[in-house]
Length: 69
Image (cartoon, rainbow, N blue to C red; front, side):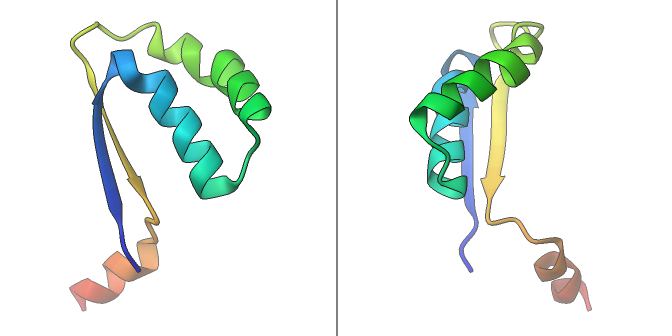
């Protein structure tokens, strides 16, 4: 299992979220636009312009817990 990490400025947030929804969850481009606009953008609009986003994919809590044992 490979974990990918993304670090992007908030100004690239829309592109990042849409890409992750499409690539990781196979959600259509049309639906990702709707989801971003209605559910994510209102929150991103509250951040300062110099904020960065950190996103990880293929995160599975079980993998991390087993590594600690």
